[in-house]
Length: 119
Image (cartoon, one colour):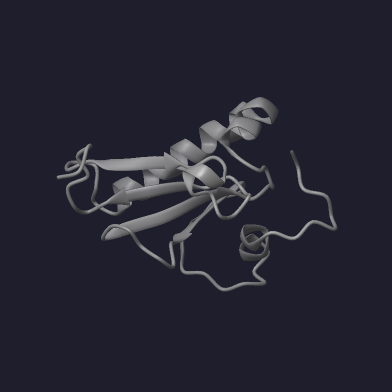
């Protein structure tokens, strides 16, 4: 679902430059920036510039853009030196999964052990 002009979203505001963020990569269709509440030594958010609510709606509406989001995530992880040790890409969908901003965003996590289950 592409956002209506009247719709406001934190990540749309970041993409528009109206809210500051520490940008890691900025491609034509995807923006990557540091998470303000990091859960790992490396925690970067990767968002398409076009508004889509979650990964399922993006996959249905524009699978090519979803592929670009994943490719950008891999570039960010590689640039952060995570390729050899490993990294995780997480898409939360809905409030029960912890999605607090209704704009698809992948979390790149790395820089420490991320084995599942933890412990």
